[in-house]
Image (cartoon, rainbow, N blue to C red; front, side, top):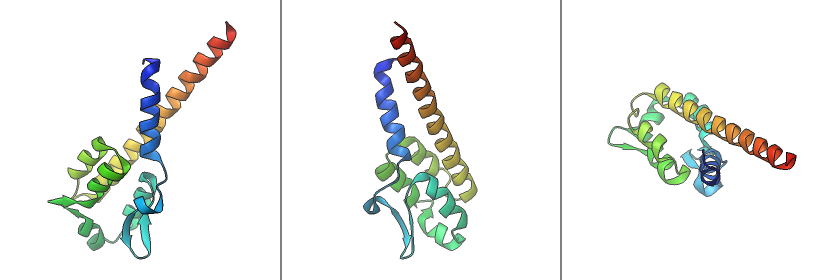
Length: 122
């Protein structure tokens, strides 16, 4: 991995994993809103099926639209579009994406730490 590509990857992963501002929340109803991808897993797991289906229609998946335009993760949004009918699969894809991005950030942090140690040793 080139050092010049690290900041872009870090910035993108951090942006995707961030806690959103209230105007970016995915509003379920007057009492519930999704505040991040991680929070989405919890909310989607507890959401009544009729309410879930209201947002996850085969012809228009509001979760995928929110992930693409607000979260900024086009890859995940595409995967979510393909799983509109299956809430458990959607949650599994969210879990996998979050785990991947967190691991990426950990790996890059470790790499940067190693580079810093090598620089200081010179």
